[in-house]
Length: 438
Image 1 (cartoon, rainbow, N blue to C red):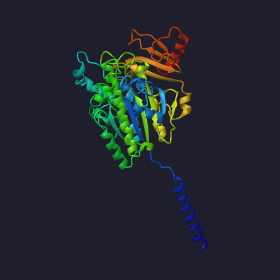
Image 2 (cartoon, rainbow, N blue to C red):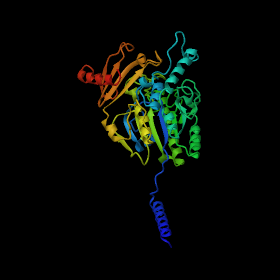
Image 3 (cartoon, one colour):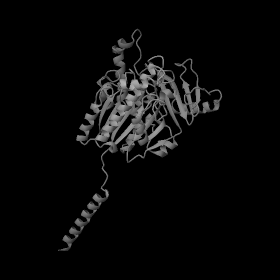
Image 4 (cartoon, rainbow, N blue to C red):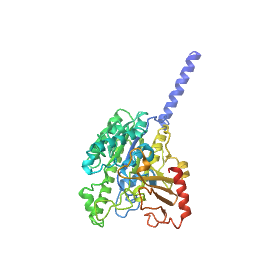
């Protein structure tokens, strides 16, 4: 055998030996395939209404399990206590005053209300302007598509056709807050399973937006959940709401089981957040004060969870989290650049979460006064820093309100306003809030 042939044979033996070692010891190069993303967005649920958060009667075993398997932030927040602007923040990573979708609906027209307003040309024109604001900023589905992702919209969606948000697939055609998309969870999860199977078959990474109308009203839970709650709840209205929460939890369980059945759990990042809070009024079918449409924790606080087995060790984090963090967290996970202007952090990075001291938010009018000037719709700004929370009204709209200061560590339901007693702390928090957005 000549020298060149000998060297070639030796290299072949070495390469074959290394391959055998890799097969034996599981040291083959890791897959470069991007992780899938499942975003679970609860709709109108208080931060207290989970068994893992300490509720006395509501049982949420599937969400509890997700919390145990995730990096879980019990002190998570959304900026606004209204569905439309909050959902827009989750998808863009921007505050409402940045993406300009501040309200649920366009300005009211004198003499029109309800269906007559929703059917009017002014309403259609206003919604189209709101859709243009969504198109003007990068959204998570659009950013993911640049990296080969396909994406599916289901459930709540306010910004017209699902493609307005950059989704490649979807259920909503363009009516006010979801149309066909609102069947998800309440009637079926089959569209999600079909989409996952299709994307997996094509070897494409995928993102699913699961934002069902749950536990959002109408509170029409299946009989099995309502029957369990009736002996426990103080009124029928509360029983129906509690039953809706358990129904929603069951749908989360079906989705997680669907991933397991397909062998996709380890390849999928699961995100959990609520768009805004809801405290059930015991005497009516509406929400109680200090919840939806308010600046209190009952309206803006939510647990936030991120799960990626094998990459992010499960743990409970005591730091503050915010829905503006979800876009940069997910983009960081796939190694994608973060768009300019985002103020969120990577929730999987302990250093970043430990260094954060404050989170901020802003609540606006249900119907906008001006679709292009967020300040004209502003009702309150708020800041949470450590154990303190300051709420600052916009006096041009909230004429009867004044500043409120709460010590959340011993007053989580915000019943005792300490603004006058702790005026120095209030002034310091206001200064920081003004530096964020005045």
